[in-house]
Amino acid sequence: MRLLKIVPDHTNIDFVRLRGWAFGLTLLLSVLAVGLTVARGLNYGVDFVGGLMIEEKFATTPPLDQVRATVDRLGVGEAFLQPVGDGRTVTIRLPVQQGADEGATNAVVKKVETALGQRFPGATFSRYSTVSGKVSGELIQKGLFAVGLAILLIGLFAIVRFEWQFGVSTIVAIVHDLLMTIGFFALTRFEFDLNIVAAVLTIIGYSINDKIVIDDRIRENMRRYRKMDMREIINLSVNETLPRTVMTSLTILLALAALLLLGGHVLRGFTAAMILGIVVGTYSSIYVSSSLLITLGLRAEPNRENPGTLDRAERTGDAERVTPRNT
Image (cartoon, rainbow, N blue to C red; front, side, top):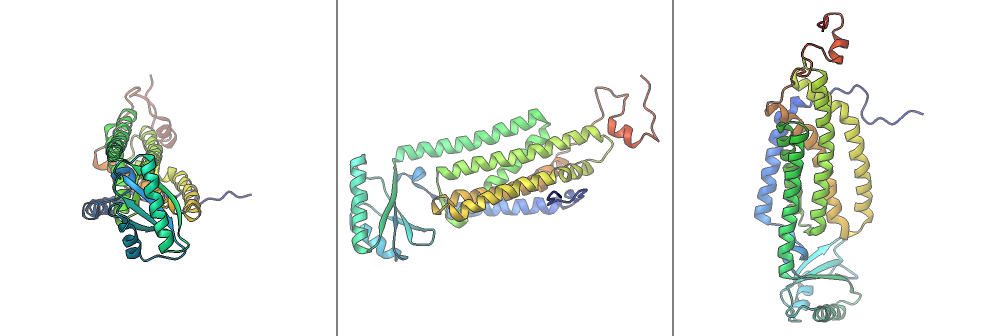
């Protein structure tokens, strides 16, 4: 039985040749992502802004202005509405209620549920969540701290494990992936909550896993082919790891596609962020971080431990031309 090979054997793609275009595209997309985020902002969930979020399902797609008017007449604060899924489900975000204990919150939820049920026959209550303003501020700080600490520690690991060039290229690739994800949420207006922070951290983990595999192969080939140009080493390393990179990405994307189609609107934002992160992370690992090593001046060095001996690859390839020095 023949094995399925998505990437043919002896693939030799000149990835480094496109590094100028890749750097330009990366810079352009990063600037656009930052611009979108600044101009439109993020649709923060209750986790980050505080307040009460009620999810209501309607029999048919409701007019949002009528839903808003119905809720505003209850005197529970200004309502912010957002349709999700097929449009028949609407999230209703209300400000933090006075005396927001469990009893008061349940009373507000019951009031909204009853009013909407009377105004729109067939409307059913789905779920609600509430977060105080103080807790939401702490969640923002902790979320930013978690992401920043993850990027810093990963960069330090790459510096200690390899060379400083690897650490810098790793941080650049991760920041690029992070900006793409944030820009995507600014564009689509998906709700940005703690689930998305978890997705971002997962994306960072996947990106660094893919990059470390490539970096490890680059370092291995630097030791094996000390006379080879750095451009050729990087192309060789990326092509050698390409089957693993493509197969891993495709299998994860298949699972995420099933989750996107069958997981419902509650998981749609999380799944969309993961799919985008896998695609962007694969691109940055292949085209951005690896080629950036050349720009940062990484060079293969001679064997310092045994300068008078040739490595195994050179002895094999140059056996007819080179005689090792006697020791």
